[in-house]
Image 1 (cartoon, rainbow, N blue to C red):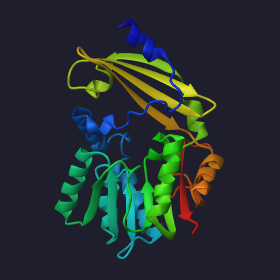
Image 2: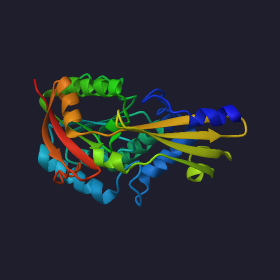
Image 3: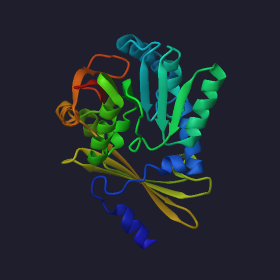
Length: 280
């Protein structure tokens, strides 16, 4: 126990450990994640239906999404965006690591008679056989990636897009980083049993890295037979940093927005969104 306590107090290097896959491969946690996606009362894994409806309506109008248009939603989860986008008549693909979420997405598409292609794969490894008009990554997924992974992801975007194709994604701002505070929290069955179906002791350690502008939510889950640690990294961005990363991948920022529903950019907000385009 002493060694476990020492380990959970030790600050790792930014993105030193990467355990995001446990959210999708652990059967119990994957069910909890799907429940968060579908919970209309909280903006946790997904935003609320009213926002999504407004976001999709804006996307369809802004990017002229219609029959003959093609798009890929990276990190599509249970298809809350892809299902709505497919109603426009566009050719829609969703890529996600979670078999649970995609099973739900496929069932909803079948129920509505929508033709949506869903691919279960880590989007960092995804390769498209065809180029599309538009790609999206929503709910600040981009912020959970390390610098190396972000470069890889932007290269995937560029490879997937037709010349002049557009990208839409959102990210956390430096203002949001300033609001985060380091802390330590202990609860029995932390997060109401989210981490295991069995009883457990849960510790949350929040570490901030000012130079890297990164926050780590580190969860230590102690069960009767095992101890697990889950690392949830979040990168926070200035406009200059994200523009540079896009430029290095052959992508150009086309517009700065307040969110993925087309709100005006606000330099005091916790999030912003970008529209980028493939340069050539």
